[in-house]
Amino acid sequence: MPAGTILIADDDSGIRTVLNQALGRAGYDVRTTGTAAGLWRWVQAGEGNLVITDVVLPDESGFDLLPRIKRTRPDLPVIVMSAQNTLLTAITAAERGAFEYLPKPFDLKELVSVVQRALATPQARRAESAETPDDRLPLIGRSAAMQEIYRIIARLTQTDLTVMVVGESGTGKELVARALHDYGRRRHGPFVAVNMAAIPKELVESELFGHERGAFTGATNRGVGRFEQAEGGSLFLDEIGDMPLEAQTRLLRVLQQGEYTTVGGRTPIRTDVRIIAATNRDLRQLIQQGLFREDLFYRLNVVPMRLPPLRERSEDIPDLVRHFLRKGAEAGLPVKSVDNEALDLLRRYRWPGNVRELENLIRRLAVLHPGEDIPASVIATELQEPPSLDADMGEEGTLSSAAERYLTHYFRDHGDRLPPPGLYDRILQDVERPLISICLSATRGNQIRAAQLLGLNRNTLRKKIRDLGLDVVRGLKID
Image (cartoon, rainbow, N blue to C red; front, side):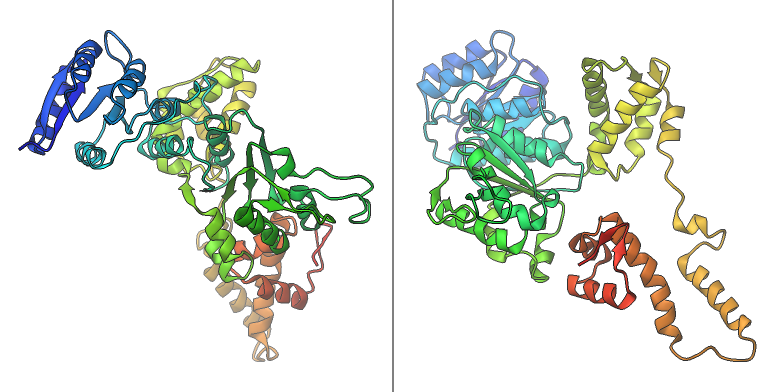
């Protein structure tokens, strides 16, 4: 007995043949057609246990056919295939009731696995959704890594689940948060974004939850918090790892009980806000250091989503470059193009600043490069890495060899006499003082970030700051 009958609609005879063979070997009865009309006749006749359809068919779009299939046979699962591998394709497939979206080209093993899951999952009628926005897509890329992000977003748009977006700086965490809002059930409500790292820690609670008049010095009027501003919509909490512990406790109450109190207030306020959090830090490490509440982590980490750095999806760079050039032209920048040799250089670069670095480079060249075409030679000059520490130290350029040369001269200068005791601590301080000072300067005096950069516990860093007498970093007092 076959495991089920699968109806396939695709105008490419080669794809129909491959799917027929692969699913036939898996034990399914397969019927194929090249038109939407042929598929619709089978569906109306009550045939088939599963539909696999391309979006682009010669007589009708698979997306236009989907709602009719769901109205006629709501329990019939539909898998959508498409070579138009964009976020909007995945979102549209999910909103119109598709069981799954598979970008072309796809892996046959994955297809068979999805078919098995679709036939094993009871189908329920899905509520009709409003039409999706057709604005410029917020996310660009056809790589396998981005396709997975699209599919996760598509599944989440019909839910209010809390999402934790993790990724390096510049990977597009806020763009993901906006996509979850703009294509979700709350798209008609406000989207409010707040960066925890940009708010003084003593003002975070007031910023998020608002305050009453007279709640603290300077509070001459009632202050509206971000939760109140985001009511009915989505609140994006960026750099959540920088939230002070006191504010973490208040946020936990919101997630547990759906209510909060303003600073200086006593009456609980009910709230209806979807939380999307983001971080480029290791929250589990912060938990071990006592800097982040473990119970809050699990409340926020309901759906974790990792954004890949640009170096892991370099095949998306040509599409991103064309997108940024088009955006620049629409904003009034000169129209430019990048040749294939230049694109190859861009693909091979590691992009420590990720997509944000790429966008800044393209916008800069669009303005400053005089020619209409941006050649590989210009890109090569722009992508030159700054000299490394080893290069600065000459041919024998390693930190250890530099230390060895320094100590050799140190002992030679003392002749036959040994230097005073305590050499280890003195040398260690000579290295630690500039290292810690530079890290504090780079993080603008933020000791939590500096400790993470150095790989130290914050208390250890504070003790070293005191012991080394590092009181001021570029005018910022370190408390």
